[in-house]
Image 1 (cartoon, one colour):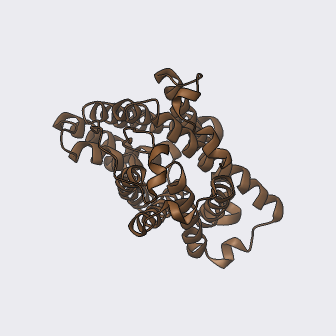
Image 2 (image 1 turned 90 degrees about the horizontal axis):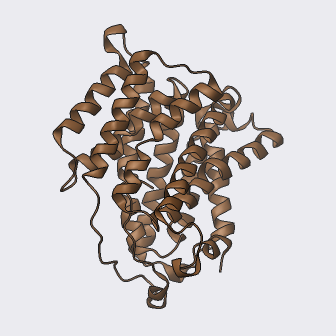
Length: 318
């Protein structure tokens, strides 16, 4: 049993933090960890560049989960392994594009624009949100981009929207992998793939500026903003319904705004702050009305692993 699998024991053996309140605390801790790690990564852009910073962070994260989880080939069917690899590719695109956007626009604005991805999934899914949530999100985007004042950096906007599209794909693939692959094994494949792709994209000139102290700093950021939140979100899903988890995750743009103010000194104007609030409200409303119904899990690649699977409701975003 790997160290992380030992944490993910059946709920009957976990008397503590198994309630909805415990799951909510885990989800909030995961979001705060992600945004704090992102805010601490921004100052490193001057030395490593946005792509180099993302590449090193994802590479370390992939190595950490391989060591901690130790996936076994017999736990995967061929198609499931391909789905995990595709999830890793989408994860790399999501992280790289988001880091490129934060190099050009404030963290809170980039996070709110990226959240349009899961919001779109919620609005377009059967039984999803209603038109007024889409209208609230549209007004929020207008306030964030402020086209009447010349708008925000076009490249930053494009990168943030590209990250949103990747996040939408990430949600759908995460649900599929969560249904098919037991435990955290899917994460142990997707994150190393994401790290390899990000390192391939990073230019040698960016990575050439990496020093050993900086490489070790990136190891800490990988644990803080990737491995820890992924694990906390997975465990939170065992305690929360899809609707409740999605509603909590809609708070992430607001948390990003706070981290931007506290860590980076990025104080938003009234319009940008109102835009973030509208996106958060739209996300909360849409996810509350668009929770995914429980599904019968497909048989895992290894029949003996069926006894290890806990029936759960995958979330709108992981």
